[in-house]
Length: 380
Image: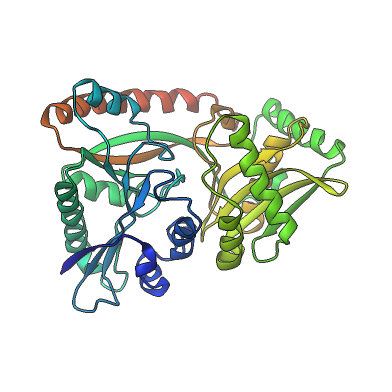
């Protein structure tokens, strides 16, 4: 078996990549990752240089393992924050960038990072080791400071731990479907006070006179896709951030990923005033972006949370991941949920210091999540 390091995912056929990645997680699809490349959402402009890894075993056209890998010259768009590590490196006179990152750019959603041949599960351990050894070899060749695997699944995390990477625990707030018949059935699981608050927020939006539209990419009009892209950009403009995605990207994934792109738009007469962008997997809905041109009471909660819960219940999805951070999500039915990342640091002294920090941070994160559970809106 040999490891290939590519400079673009366009060098791999969609069929070969998707055979390994599957289509359960929309962000790992060839269509999603290639659209990022084609429309300049990654590359020199934003410091994400594609270096996907492939493991081939004889047939070059049918790789048996892969990983979505990037050379990074900054830490933007990762959602596992290592700014303090970079600062300490630089203060010590060392170079933190470039580094290697195995992740989906700008997407804090848990998913496989070790993409292993689904037809040979008995080889998964061996394939994972070849892939990880390949990542180690690339890190040495490039002389990077570190390698980071962001938001891997729990099973991938255990393989990364066994490969002697340091594990970092994070927290997101996610909603889980316990067989609810509809939104009212979901709210029935709340205490009376919390249930009243959610109903009040939804009533504010109804009384505003806005029309709410939920459309898939395959059925969205050009105007709806343009509105969604506009609201995405507006949010970054308001927050002094950098909008890395663009209209061309959204137009392409609407065409190539069809029903896996879900747009939730609010319209006031003939004018769209707000929107949320979600992606749908086989068993989960992922909330990704939101923006608005006008302020309406509780509209953010309606478009970003309640419509997503409605959608997940209607389509029988097991969970709804509305994105990173946001303790305010707890009172609306989202529960603290662990996420993981795995890290290798080249410099031995920093590796020991970071390992000590992560051990203490993990204890603190465990305490934090248990404390948050006390604020759950659900009945005991």
